[in-house]
Length: 491
Picture 1 (cartoon, rainbow, N blue to C red):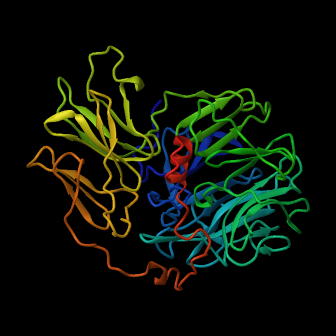
Picture 2: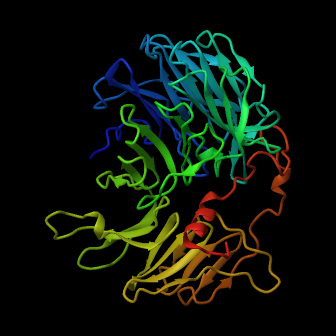
């Protein structure tokens, strides 16, 4: 397998859509469609007319994060794009855009404000002029995330986006976060929504009368709405809906109850889904571990091991002989080490890569005099020393001294080894630490380097938000998941 998108303006992709009237026409909306601290932005919409062999940018270059591309099945020139807009600041191109000429020009058909974009849009298959769109107010800074506000809502148009009505009956009011939408192909009067909201408004909602009124079916909500919030209706059962999550689930009664999809021999954290309309036992899930396919409704999955989808946050090398090794931390798939060359006729294969430590990985550095000693991290300063020769793995994260306030660690923690002493390493939280014995003991070599200000008093989107604002600072899903999977009670 090879990537078809390496030579364009963005490697970050939020969505891919096929023209329903021409299987060779592919649209790519660039920029991840979530609000992660490490999210990558894009440069608009791309179109391919040769099945993905080549692409042309057709606009919306300032959208940065595109969540959805929809094509009118009656006329392929008519295209809708849901743009979340820039994450770290206001403005840009955000909202719902429409073109009637294949993207030569674009019209903003649903604009809320410089702080609010559109994160999802669905179309009634009986009448493609009927649209439901979810507006999404958000902003991330180094010190916080606000993942919702009074401008979050579901909107409906019956005239192809010319006019819109905000739907309110049965839906949460006040501050609303990210919303995921799905419309049933079996009965398009049924529209489902997973909603994040303040004041116990979060939950799974359904309308059976085209949005005129909504019912909260259950309190189900995503573990982290900014990272998921995508739902999919079953093509033959109006009451069956799939929802992507850390542990994805299915409802067979319209959202009253949910059952988890098996993760047997499968990675968690799901972000993409396709179901075979002719055989609903056959579906695919794409997530942090790659692509998984089931033919028995999720009882068993097959992993597509030939897709090079691993993402490295940091990369380094060692002095191993005869071939130096490459190591680094990966997104949610451990810190890994593997050979730079091999004498194997098949080349370097998956089995040549050795996991060092779990979680999301960051720096992985070796002792310059002994390449079998490796220092590697997982999130929030989870520093370990791994001896590849003996197999010993030891946590060496600096701990607070007596009567000292807890250290404040970054998600991706700075770590260096000294070029002057092979046993000396440095790591930094809100203070800087040095060890001269490979992490067995630590010295604090700086004062608190932070500004000693209350981040809850900073303005975000022109106002100070309360501590109970929607998903403020964002629940650490990854730390929770690591603790859950590894049964780490101290978390």
